[in-house]
Image (tube, rainbow, N blue to C red; front, side):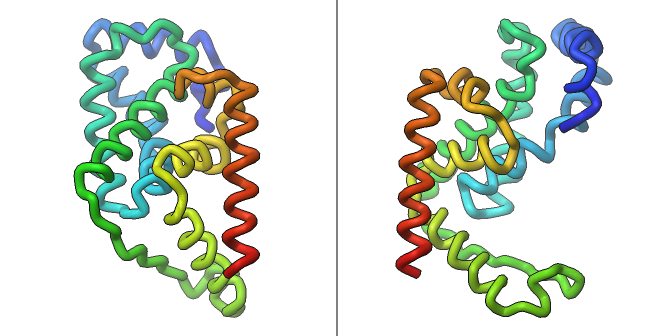
Length: 180
C-alpha cells in the first residue's frame, strides 16, 4: 500500500493531472502501483517475463484509457484489473506451460528448512492447476490485499459472489495441498 492510498485528495489530484496528460503525474502512478501489477500478473501467469510484459501492456492501456476512469480513488483496483486481464490474455495466447523456478536466497527462512521449501513448491504447483480466473482472484485477495468489494468491482461481479467463489477456490487449493 502506498502513501497515496492514505491521502485520497492527493490521489485524486494526481489522477486528474495524469488525465490531463501530465507525464510526471503518470510516472508517479507507475512508481506507486507497478509492483502490485507485477505481483498479480505473476500469480496469474507463473512466469516473471510474461508478468513483466503484462504489466507493461497494462500501463499502455491505462495511459490510453485513464480519461475514462470514473472513480479516481479506485485507480489501484482499476490498474490491477487491467494487469490481470493482460496477464490472462498473454497466457491464453501462449498456450504453454512454463516451468516455474523458485529462487530461495540463503537468508530466507526456508534456507534451513527443506520442508518449508517443499511446502512452497506444493503451493506453486497447486496454484498452477487453478484456472486463470481463479489465480487472478487469489492474487487480488492475498497478494495485493483487495477486499471482496474491490475485487467484485474490478471483475464486474457481486461482492457476495466473489466471497463464495473465493471460498470454493480456497477449498480446492486445500484439497490439492492435502493430496500432495
